[in-house]
Amino acid sequence: MTMADSTVDAVIIGGGFYGAAIAIYLAKQRGLKHIVLVERESALLTRASYNNQARVHNGYHYPRSYTTAYRSRVNLPRFVHDWPEAVKQDFTKLYAIARRNSKVTAKQFVRYCKEIRAKIEPADMSLRQLFEPHLIEEVFLVEEYAFDASKLANWAERELQECGVEIHLETRVTAISRGDEALKVCARDEDGSESEIVSRYVFNCTYSGLNQFAGDFPGTTTHLKQEITEMALMDAPPALKGLGITVMDGPFFSMMPFPARGLHTLSHVRYTPHMHWNDQCGIDPYQKLNDYERATRVDRMVRDVGRYLPAVLDAQYVDSLFEIKSVLVKNEGDDGRPILFEKHEELPGCYSVLGGKIDNIYDVLEKLNDEHFEK
Image (cartoon, rainbow, N blue to C red; front, side, top):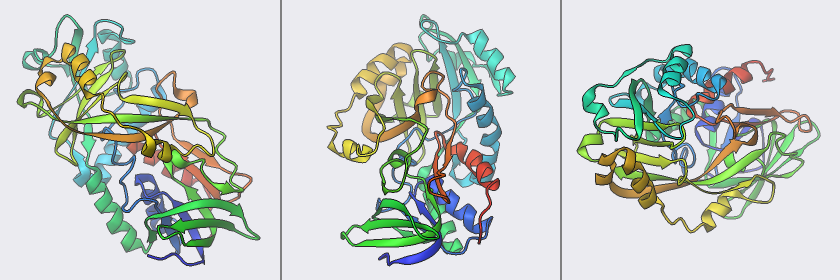
């Protein structure tokens, strides 16, 4: 769709899960009539919303960040209720605690799970036997799920159409500026044609691209770190087919179902991050990813994981998902994943939003509930 100069109620920049969900919320819950969503890719939910571990967290992952763990516990049942068709529950989820170099012991992990009221019980012997006992202290059966990003994309397309949201794909916003009475958003489509939208509200939901705008956009006050990451897609061997496994909390790795492809993702604390840098305007993360060689580290992942979980040595490598991962610098030490939600006082009506996990969407919507929007 060609974008023409226009005046609208709200512009959503970024067609990932967060951008789509916010657009739908503004239309359905807040009654905004003319909403435009701008996405630089050729389809919705094709970047960070898709290229990730596809885990619906239930708090187990965050023993060093109680707030993140608690919010996951609160949000998971809501997410399952709201997107049941996109949630995969029919697998067995295990968390195993490493004997050496772990930042949490098995006893501490059990106590922590009871504090956040997360289900946990010792795994039976048939499952424990999958692990190398000299390296694994204990194995627990827990309750955690995965999501299918392609089904979430189908939901987004259907809902956005029903809400009458105007979608512009293969279009990139280049600048956000102050106008006389509203905000001005400059965009360029795939043909190089430029247009300007005047809008009362602008929601910057570009994830890694949050700070890549010219004009009067001031940038986020919250500092970000960008990482190029690799999720290896594996065809799991029969012994691991119906399982999701996480080993923590030092030699940290996961093998999780990836429903959109019918495979498993393999991630590793040491080998999944390929490179990182502090985010700043003018260093386009997506360009850095495009220029990156993308040499897989799957052999190193499998070799190390195989010491703890020998059956992974029989998994077949299929592909890798390379993507930019954005994290808040202030949470590097505790692995917390709070949302970034900033109102830019220099640009009244402009918001920047970033979530570290898919279920954080509820934290964003709670923030938006407190905002006054003129129709």
